[in-house]
Image 1 (spheres, rainbow, N blue to C red):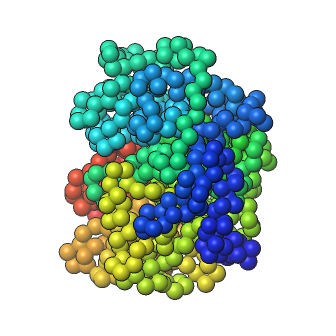
Image 2: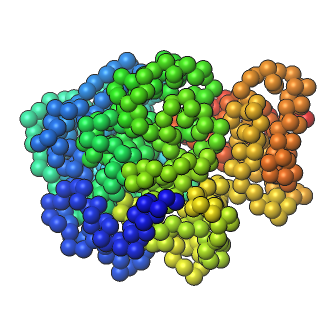
Image 3: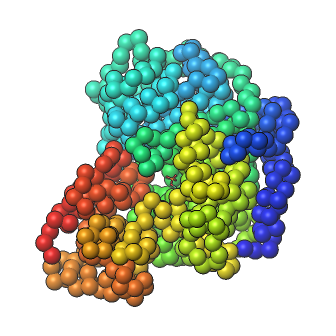
Length: 633
Ligand code: AMP
């Protein structure tokens, strides 16, 4: 860790109140807070107690004085071939209209509003309108199907659902409304009203009279609406975001208002270095935490222009993202390693033909970033690529380099250092602290910093039991990730504690084996899962995508490559980690947001039901796994 950042981080822990009081000045407060931190009921932390503020005010209204005519949101859809710009003034108008519409449908402070929407600007407008009213939004990823949606409706009991006729992905219409209707019929908590943006994509679109309302019609009735901001005490909930855990029941991560606003504003300054007037492009979806924090709230709080992109990275061609960076002079970009690996399979001229001189950094998160991918993208971009690590629960980075405070050298495979505010340490399973180079659980000594989840929606007990009960004698937030810290203070994430595989009594991370498999130059992508083995408890099994199909064109070629890959693992980790088999497939099963469905692969490999596949990108990938594991050697 660099000297300057080390000192910055130390102060954020040792002088928490002083540190966060300073950061709190980055946002507007309607009423100043009485106390920076109230921590009388561990592990529940209350930040900026007594202060009143509002996320919509900070994201939109407060910029009107200085940047009303600057673009706030640029909507780009390569699916519908649309480009729309909203200045801060226009965004303010739209948010007021939407807030008035929501009010007319009975929504007020503390009410839940569930959003099930494609990446259209109305989604951001609806989120901000909720924030304006003090209503609690819960965005459900558009890739979830009826059952998942119904469980979330049941848990959040929304007064209103905002949705759309359809989304589009890869040129195909994805119908939302029938799934929503089915979810509502499955749910025990039926909303009073549904507000629908009809994009005209679905010729079979139908509405339910009395319950369903048309966005455009109601908007037209409120064109001049001005809805005052509802000032909220800093600790009131701003939103719920469901995330899957080890049980079938989704957990509603609940976020506050003031702490979240401050954490995001501070992250834009110190980590992302996004300045007012510049443009940020985050390639996620509003259904995920990255979309909440870094497509919608943070760039707007920072007075930036945010790119709101509907489309995939390889359509119309693999240069589309870089064209967006060039055309909109993007300075901060945020994406996920998988997407970069997809692009890596394409010709690098797709990147290089664009003028990327505006770009300062590319940030990647969500899954481990392997060294070959990191090197490749950093080389072709010619700009620093920052691996950073965080979770839905934390809302902003936990491990990162912090270039706004001090530029520190990259170590490949490492998301660097604990972010300021996190007393992040590595714990052995008995709760004692691990030393350098020792694999242990990534934990955070509470209080968690501002911006992190304040509880699990409607279930304080579950919050404590899920996140703070891993170690018997110490109240520690568990990330459920394994990690390691080297002598220089760099951290490496080694996979989920709940995905660990145990081979003949030896613990191995599937992640480590994947890196080893990927060290073979023929391999583009790989998934390793642990499968039950009568003799050894578990054995790793690998499913690999090769760069050149010729390498696996014949059974002989496959067998030869399989041997080579195994030898590579032997060489990197030892024979203990060698996969029982390396199956070659042309694609891996992933969610639509690009995450590998490891558990489903594992289930199939063990002949079990692959589980909830509602977020699956492409079913053929799973079929390949099925066929591969059944094929005789
Ligand atoms: P989610 O809450 O869905 O964003 O998933 C969070 C999990 O993704 C973490 O607990 C990690 O297991 C993994 N993760 C996120 N970012 C990284 C990263 N930079 N490196 C390694 N794993 C990561």
